[in-house]
Amino acid sequence: MSEPSRDHDIPARRWRRGHTAIAVTLVILAAAVILGISSLDLPRVGEALVDASPGWVLASVGLMATSLLMRSISWHQTLRAALPDTPMPWPPVVRATMIGVMASAVFPGRIGEPVRIVVLSRRLDGSNRTLVPIVAGTVFSQTLINILALILLAAITFTEIPSLHGHLNGIESVLALPLAVVVLVVLGPRLLALARRSRWERLRRGGDLVARALVLARRGLTVFARPRYGVAAVSAQLIAWGLQWLACYMVILALGLQSHAGLATAAAILLAINVSAILPATPSNVGVFQAACLVVLAASGVGAGPGLAYGIILQAVEVLTALMLGIPALVREGLRWSDLRPALQGAAEDIEP
Image (cartoon, rainbow, N blue to C red; front, side, top):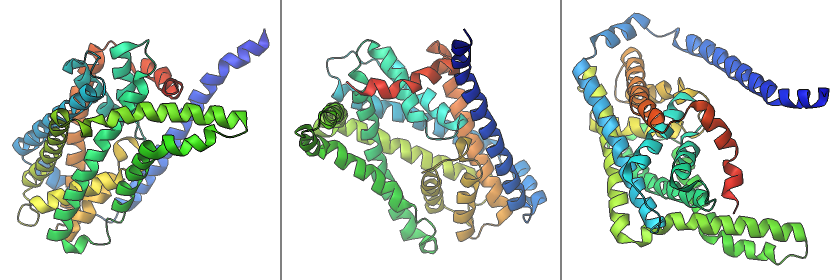
């Protein structure tokens, strides 16, 4: 009787250890932030925050919210291309998008993507295990569109603000990793054919499972071969990026920094915060997010105090928008965070056909 009890306590112990690790990480981060900003003129930061124009901040929130709706439209078109025989109403796609964005804003790590995959897959057809890798493939297709948006932002940034050359070295990683994955998705099944002909049974079985999963994932990329859906998906996603760009500029106007920073600076900020989010260590990438804004604004001649105030306000806009849209979506789906945790743990098993 004692053994089952100890086995039953294992998840609880892991959960407590996980919370302890997060708490320790947050304490260390808080200490680092305090040390990092000790040299800043904190009264100047507070003054900039107080003087920020509420109207421009609200405009930024509105633009950010609209950009998320446009992203859901892009994903909806991608899903329709990949799953033409599956009923695909837009509202569940919107809710899954908002819940995923909120998850990324609240928790450390980039868990928003798997969250929205799980939320939408259970809504579409909980009994069809092949849907999960296909939906995952559609999410990846949006990543490829995001690469195009990042390239455009990088072109604007390095053309208009040459002093940022060398400060955004992570852009190569942003572009290289998804491109490497797409090569694996497209060419993987052919490469794995060698493993499936191996004399070792385990290698053959493993190669067969991976190859079948990759074939399903490739269906998520069919949007690029169907112009009817592809044009709409790419356009909506790029419009979403454009709205986020304008949202970043609204915060510049809110702080009265337009004499130093313009639309090109806003583009550079949007690029920088996405580069800094490659390996997020904290919820919403707190700290690193502000540092990215400081680097860009400093190159435009903005002081550290207003620069930090900008990073705080822009991140508050992102988190507020995510919660404002994500919480109602979570309620409408009849879900709690505790419902998503086991679903995410089983997502890897669902990807295997």
